[in-house]
Image (cartoon, rainbow, N blue to C red; front, side, top):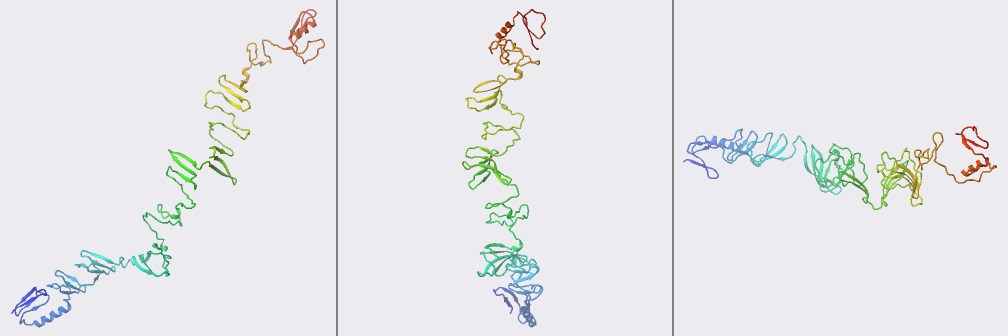
Length: 462
């Protein structure tokens, strides 16, 4: 009678007739009264013991069948399609072929473990390979006087670069580069480690250094401080028309409006002073006085260009003003108008020396009474033809008049009158001639000639 061979689930594997054998599986199955079944049975038992150990998988495996793959020395199980590794990581230099989801692969080249996700191997750890040495985060416990502290240490190439901690403490066992560990992120001080990149906010800046690492990475000590006196070696530019404000009450401002610059002392009735160091003594040569809006200047003033004064000039010191220029020009650009010098007196109209443009002559006087200043060109040698003009002598020392009227001066001439202090009048001269007698009285520069007894001849020098 034939044997019907069933699997565990009742599925028929094969039917074996009497006296025959079947090789449709990895084992040899025997029918009833098969000759030599003892050898085949024993071989089947050996195969079961060694899980069909071979470099080649069984040719007719059943689902669930085990096979020891001598190529990799691993037990594999048949899943109905392929032999899969049964548990444990695959340790080899090459990535396994035909893996199943969940399989672990230990890469002997890098000493790293990966897991198969069903589509690819994903690194489990460590994140660094054996040539990179310890790199990445590592959880550590550090002792301190306040008890053990759990921290996260970041390593690169087996060197601790930073420590992340939830609190500030001092390790009781020396940690290279970490004398104190701050709450937050502490960098290794021996590495000169810094944060490099973009930061939107910082609670403080280290101003202990002034060495810049590049033209765009500036040391903290090179920034101007707002809480203390500081110095800059570069130009300071305030790029706003609001300008600069100085003083605890904002007394001094420098602002710009429509490209006009305003320097202002904003405190009421206070001064804007400009001081200098004169031989160790502080002096104020220029002061803008807030109480009266005036300008006070102390010391010599040198003006290279023109000085234009639209108001009055007043010298309250009463001193003599000295001018080194050869001329003093008045009414420059003022058109045709009288101008000159006024000397203040007690009169209603002060004393004046001025040029009268209407007559083109110099005038002088006071109390509103002014007369012409006589020039040489205004005088004449001939008063007979230029009446009303001032007389002057000609080149010979002579001047001419139409007549001379003298008031009676002195007493009548007598024969004994020898005084030279009296000026005779015309009548006295006639009386003088009468006393000498004669009809002819001659006045000439020449000597007398001819004549009659009693004639009077007066000779004078030309």
